Length: 445
Image 1 (tube, rainbow, N blue to C red):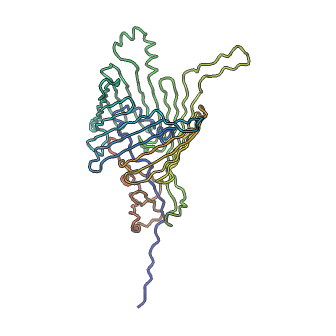
Image 2 (cartoon, one colour; image 1 turned 90 degrees about the horizontal axis):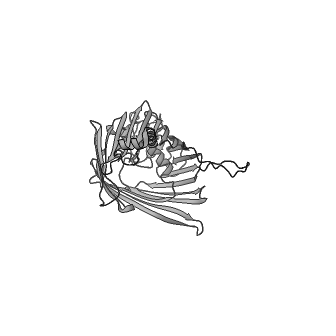
Image 3 (cartoon, one colour; image 1 turned 90 degrees about the vertical axis):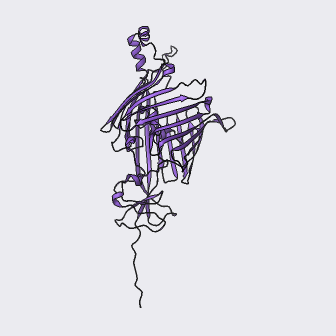
């Protein structure tokens, strides 16, 4: 009786798809703030130019009990670091920190919540509540200090938000002060908005007009108005990094800010000897940001000392320029670099995807103005937040619990034991598999 030789199909050639370095914590408190501060790629630019890459020490803790995901705690610690050029040591100063305990009714809906925040700086403590009616698209929120005799006053706000328009305001009744008014809209990839942040009490407006005149009052109002316009493809995420965003903003008739942000998922060849032979590549995430801040106020000019050879020189820089690049090579490693008129900085971050996950980042650079080196450290741990993926186009995929894989061959077969499940081609862009499931209200401005 002879043996029959069986031939099995070779495993499909694959491309690894790591999760984005940070879990999804987008806009958890945005409905209790001005929408203007969350549009025009502001959160993504802040992440690119500041997170992991400044000369400070940071520690962050985000934890939520598995028994009740409606409850979460966030603790932050911050310490400024400076280099002593004489002793050649790093000195920590200006320590601060805060802790926030948060409760939300629905774990999947972040817009209605109650939290209590206690801060080390100034021994401040405040309670905040936010309610947003998804059906009618309106909301109300309030922030009340808990410390007796504290200088911070209670703030109350109302808002209307939909996928195409948002408007709202914030006031402090005890001080008769208006904190801000905003209005913004979005259509065909374009977003435009305006925000008014007055200074001083809003009582007795008629006496104010009579004392300063209408023209002077108009100038004062214009100094506290900011407006911006941006373009981003409609398929890009409102709060994520999207494909690209180009924005122009005028801040209080004093500064012109021009920003550009480009995020892309790119594929490179894999030469890692620790990976299986069927791995031919890995998806990388690349962010490039450019920001120019130019003064709209004429700079004071030094008139010289009467010498014809003396040349008038401006007392301030004509413009501030920043260029930053972030490269995520795999699920564990993130590299960032930034160069600008103020200095140069670079950082390397490592993340261990345990439960809870842990990350650490080291940064270093040189300050051109102070003419001294800069150093920074960031530590963090978390156990909640959606894990997100992004895949390059025109490829199928299958994956493990964390590292998903693109299938390069047309066969639709299960992977070997321990390697996870093969994702069908029709599910290539499935938002649930990508960790990008969004509620209806997540598209609201």
